[in-house]
Amino acid sequence: MDIDARLAPAEDSLRQLLADEGPGGYDFAFIDADKRAYGKYFELCLQLVRQGGLIAVDNVLWYGKVADSQVDDKATVALREFNAAVLADPRVTLSIVPVGDGMALCRKR
Ligand SMILES: C[S@@+](CC[C@H](N)C(=O)[O-])C[C@H]1O[C@@H](n2cnc3c(N)ncnc32)[C@H](O)[C@@H]1O
Image: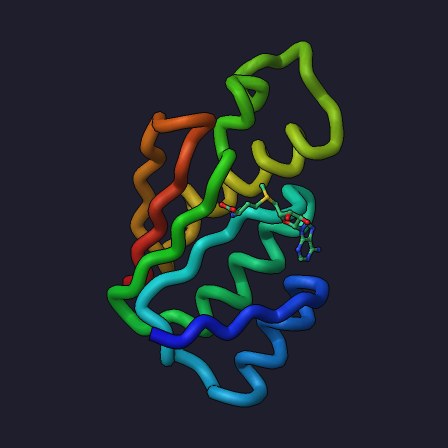
């Protein structure tokens, strides 16, 4: 197995993969970077993975802060909005697994 490491802003790398390889070529994507950009990464990964492919998204429970109405820092608010958007997204089925601080498993329909 080859590993192709790209040291660059993740959005640029994902856009480059799409430009170079087109959509639907991947079985699996794992999102685990800056929380406020999760929505952008999700949209790009959704194009990159095939129908039936999986996008795993780390930290979606954010140490429980997403469920604490007293917490409103930018990362927490962004993750709350991300979770709500993915739950309502008809393009995927969603399970959130409560391991660590929450892993969303999004299967592309
Ligand atoms: C929680 S760590 C990821 C750990 C990795 N998934 C692992 O299991 O070893 C988050 C990483 O995302 C990187 N990161 C943050 N913002 C980024 C961005 N905009 N583009 C690319 N990488 C970013 C950070 O430098 C950090 O290495």
